[in-house]
Each structure stands twice: as structure tokens, then as C-alpha cells.
Length: 221
Image (tube, rainbow, N blue to C red):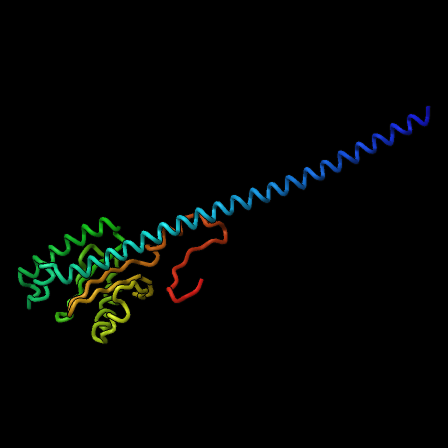
């Protein structure tokens, strides 16, 4: 009789060990599944962020390409620009009318691309820098822009540094992305604040350690 009871006690220990082993294996499987799920979610999030960034960057590149073409066409073909460049007196009625017409067209363009884009025309012979749409630069920034554009035109480095490419420029300790399209002694200028340019990307949730920055194409991330 005692022998039978002893055999039953061993059986209980056996089952307890089996339950502990199964529980341990289940815990390990749960950890593996949880880790795989977290990894999958991270990969999907990273893929979503990359896709969103790529779409926005493509949009920016398309905007820049269109603006570059539009400004070049305007300088070469627009009658109002021709009037402004050929009129000696900037107070002349024809000059003022042409300036207003140009301002209206670029104001409409600005509505399509966003008020963060600024447009100017620089007439070197008159040393005039006129905004061709509502601008969001402060007066010190405007003064800094005029000085730099004047210096670039005098040094004749606009073709080398700015033509057909968007470049960073520092205006009164605030960075902008600028494009300058020259045509003889007339220049069309478009610029946008670097902060405004990448703001949509900064609004994406990148986690506690994520960030977005703007780098020169020669820099490496």
C-alpha cells in the first residue's frame, strides 16, 4: 500500500515539472512574438516615415523646378518686365503699372505654392530690389538680401553659385533657401525660410530621438 502512494507522489512531481517547463516555453514564445511584433511595427513605421519624406521631397523638387522655369520664362518673355527694365524713371506711370501687373501674377503664384514663398525682381541698372508678391521677411532681412544680391551681381558669381540650383543663404541670422535666375541685368529671386521648408516633416512623429534637419547636398548624413 505504501509503495502505491509513493508512486503517485512521483507522478505529481513529474506533472509539476512538466507544467513549469511548458510555462517557461510559453513565456519564451510570448517574448519572441512580442519582440517580433515590435520589430514589425518599427519597420512599418520606418517605411511610412520614409514614404512620407520621399513624397514631400519629390513635391519640393517639383515646386523648385517649376518656379525656376517660371521665373526664367518671365524674365525672357514678360512684357511688364521689359517695360520695367527699359523705363528710365521708376516713378513713370508705365513702370508703376508694369510693376503692379507683375505683382498680381506672382501673388497668384504664391497662393498656389504657399505664402512662405517670397518672390523678388532685382534690376541691376537701377539697383532696385522689388518684392513681386507679399513678403514675410523682416526689414533687416530684406536689407541683408538686397546687399547680398547686389554684391553677387557685382562679383558676377550668380551663374556659378545660384543658377538652376537652390542654395542656402543667411539673412540676419535666419537661413533661407534661395534661387536666383539671371537674364542680362535683371534677376528673378525666390526664397523660402529653411524652417518653413521642413516644417511639415518636423510635424511627423519621429519618436523621442528623431529629428529633421536640412543639409547641404555636399554634406553626409
